[in-house]
Length: 209
Image (cartoon, rainbow, N blue to C red; front, side, top):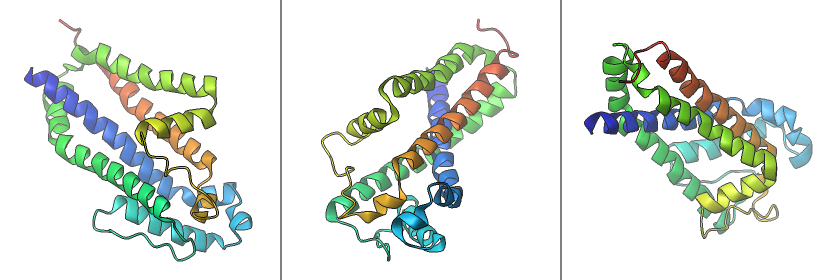
């Protein structure tokens, strides 16, 4: 029972790792998005100004000590601020899960991975690797726009403040839907990279008893 709990905590830690890496890499790679989407021509601001406002937004979302969001070049409605606050809580939840479960992951690496017992979890890693493919298939079947809407309806059930009105929350112009599609793809690559690596390593480990 204790081993199952440690393994579950390790999986949660790896999931949180993939989420946090996606967040920070999306932040790091945002200058490329500015150019790719030609955002300066869409919002009539310099690329540096767009990046500055985006940095303020991301700092608010990821920094637990930042409690107020005020972007100098983009006004925000109360609904928009409410949504960003909800996203902030989810980001902090991922950070908290990572910190709380990190000791379990370290223990798993020391007692399971390094001692060659990874094969005991081969089936679990295979299942974890297949799950994103199911969601990717769903997104392909219904289209990313519908998948994106469904994602928000599930994650923010009963709250439609995520449906930004560009007239009230013009920041949405520098956060096009395709930007989030790139983030989803990045997360899928990171997630699959982690769990497929563990799966293939487990094939070299001991067989499940």
